[in-house]
Image (cartoon, rainbow, N blue to C red):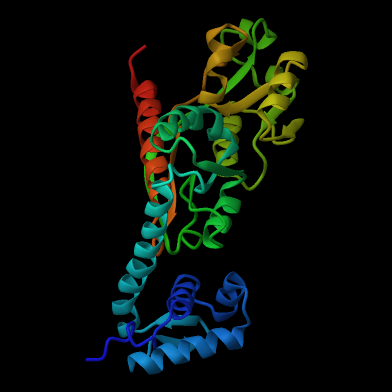
Length: 316
């Protein structure tokens, strides 16, 4: 059988276009990702189907769905691009990674507790590599990942629809805690009185974030009325200042306030129930192989996540 690559009949643009449509199940969205027109996507797919002699997609109201032949072809197409990416990465690595940049996304509530340890290990293997770090809400990170703006993300497991074409690898669990400044009036009560807490400003994650759901569950368990003064923010520096200077009650991932609790600047309020910890993990596209530098950073993040998990479950 004719070698279609050697003959030049199958080109890299055919593979890129096929994988974009397979990932997004939509020609228009694939066109936007590839920065070409939808007719160009249709033409490129038709060329590929003609050369291969099979139909790769069924087009209909639900978009473009892979046929049986398309599903057979997909992992080989993915491997093709992945191998090319690896080869480029190896060339860059031979130059100590001076021209390598890894783009990743990470939740702001996780970045400061996970990245320092991971980057220390990563730089041992890639001392000249650069990083481009995007922080944002989980949904924003998933969108960047789908658009190939980043190679992977550190975040929470998304809704099933948002996780189409994605994988989630668990790293550690992040407990929610409630803190106030040392010497706060609420620390003097043997049992927290809902109306006493309601007199203070609550700092909570913004609406639409998964951690907000955990915070609302805790607020409800405390018996607080629905309409209580709140500040919605993911800014650690702002929330800390409000907690220290405005007697606010801060609903926050535990790791972000470890130092403040350890040096007695902050104090934890007794939680009304357990089980508020959320799984954090690595979010990746299933159709793209990470670059060698990204693989090294992923390994470093796994080790840092394991350290976090061991610290969480350690007695005392």
